[in-house]
Length: 102
Figure 1 (tube, one colour):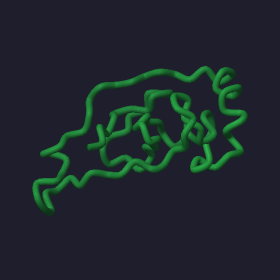
Figure 2 (cartoon, rainbow, N blue to C red):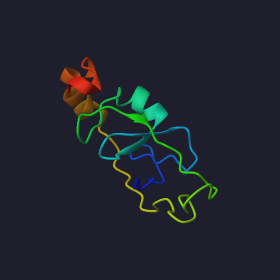
Figure 3 (tube, one colour):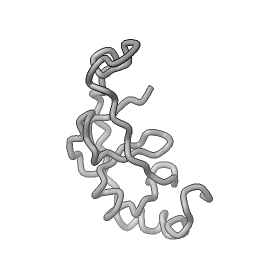
């Protein structure tokens, strides 16, 4: 089950469960769309993978008790601002590679 982390790890922008701005990597590192595009260049600073929009958990119990109230979003903030220069050096060889080839 996805944790649905509450904020961007870089800029600490709020990313509530229904946010269409949340992006995650396969390890669920969570960033806002702006940081993914302008700071990270679609390269996760923690694993080198790419990002995808985070799914939105239904707010209503449509079927089988699979909804936000039964499985609430995480509340633990992971604010780990990225060092732009260090990330640029890390991301340089990965940026041109599609995530599926990294």
